[in-house]
Length: 234
Image (cartoon, rainbow, N blue to C red; front, side):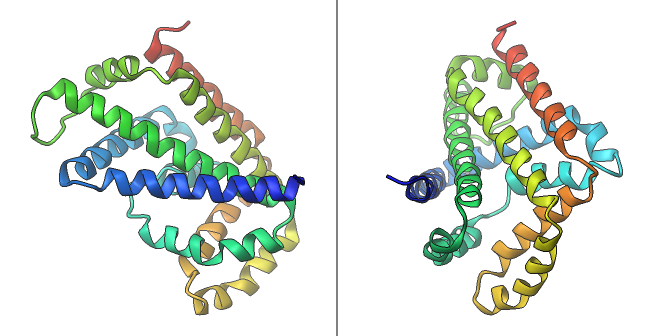
């Protein structure tokens, strides 16, 4: 199988997995509420861990993109529908590197949904009630250790690094900004405006920095340290 076909196959596989995980997480009101509670707690933790990056003029846009776009608490139904609508076109026209980057982003999406669902179930089991989850730092750390999945957690962090470095490379391509602007109106006319806006925000966030490599390495180092702290693996 060629590299292009491998990337295309991975893209389809990870997209289907992410969508499946979201559908399962919305199967009941309790599951949907637990998913949202876990995501909101983790977003708040990320905002504290990376507060300096969020506050800095240069890295602020990229940090906010990671917190609110790549790891979102929003309803992603429309974005999923947009991707499904254009996935055949993406597979046909995107170069191998771009396809591989998009496949990595969808893999991280699917993996985040899977881990959040498992963490939510662990927290729910520990709570022993159907009342709304109230997550504390102690509860979170205990559930994190109990659920295991250390290899998947490390893969999630590795994907963050891979995607961030790829976005940084794309942001150094000046012609891409013009191409994205040209495609804005056609994208909205085709019904995939939300997906296009997501791509534009990601490009603009990384283009705002002189070089995003230090930014990415800082995030990755901190997240590995946080994983080691939670698991006691130091």
